[in-house]
Length: 135
Image (tube, rainbow, N blue to C red; front, side):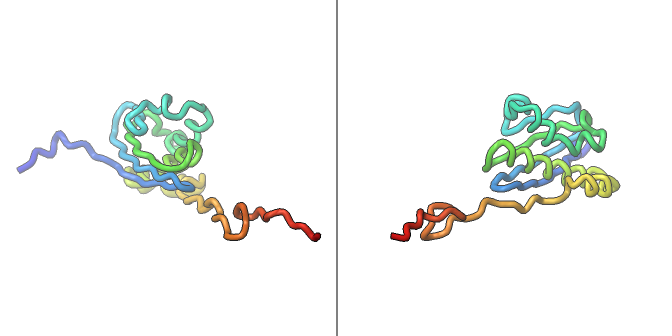
């Protein structure tokens, strides 16, 4: 028989953006955020990227109520921040389903489908053509 009194409730969410994938584990706590084992401020050195990633918590006024562990791979800083944002929003739904209308209206639950267009054969890039010479 296991003792469930010392087990804390964990809320899990997955977010994707471009080629970045973020796995979020949220527990009730003091507001500590770790990204790939590093402090949040150290991992994302730009203020606007940090604000973007934690926006769902700010809008729902739950900013310092959760300790968050993030495992994120792929993409760049902006894509990773977008993936974390979606993952946090999905984890918040597990915490309280009544937050859905607020999160939906703010656009936090929408997966951004934009991806890099593939390079086509016979061209140097996705849209660029090799120089055309008439003579």
